[in-house]
Length: 376
Image (cartoon, rainbow, N blue to C red; front, side, top):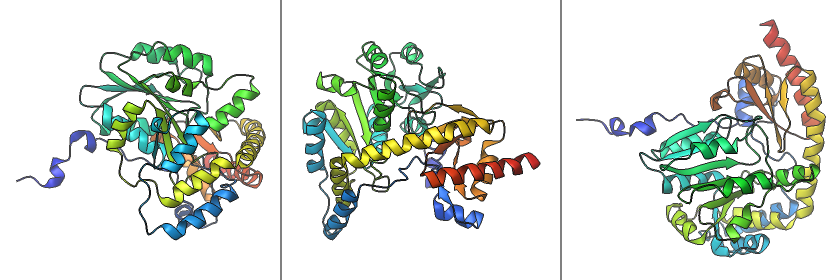
């Protein structure tokens, strides 16, 4: 008789686990020194003081189950985005919604499409849902929307589009997205992952471009578009896990049936509501991030890396060294960065932009680690 472990489906057996950015305490145990984390694209400037106060106040009510639908937050988001509350689904982070959409729409024989060098979660949720995963080559380190359109067939159910893209930090603007959306067949759900939308809007303005008209598709009644946003990046609430999707109300009801009940905690909803209201804090975080990017990019190029211009709060760079070994050496000098080898990119690192002090410490750690790698 077979054991229960023998009955795990083959598509699950074949999965490789998501490798998160290393926690600070784990890195410090391994390296024996104090470390700073610059691996997971968190906001180094922290959450709004208003959010912190709201979280503290809400903590007195954690003996009660949260509102499954996060109705107060949905009302606020609906007013902000000029959509109905029924067109918003709140989940425990935008990655949870990506998983929900994949489990709802995919099955054996169906496929999902995205770009190479994009968010590794797309692959994992597709394969876990028994779907076929298709990657098209990048164009200028980002999404080739024409190639994605050409890859769509009758069995395609999802197209994952990250804008700005993680991990390369590349962006495309509203006109390109309009052209793409207008040609996507109605049987394909376009999942517009705009986790870094605050940064995207900031950099688009610098280029005198319009970042995205993604929400216009939802307002116009497009059933096959879902726009994902998160509070984990510019709002500085990664530890609370709050994200949401904006889409067709009918489709969102199906996704809500797959969502885990009570998935967004009482403090998480309270913190997100307060964070939305502190626009000055978000603006300051974006400006400080841009200053960090301007400081780091030329210095990283001087060190010999190929650095891709970013429209986010992280920097993608390519190295001739083993990125995993180099990342380990940088950690041993006190900074945690991300090797992209586990993401299938064998020659690249991704570095989150930190505070001015952290950015200076990073460069020193990288210089020492590179000396060690070259000496070895």
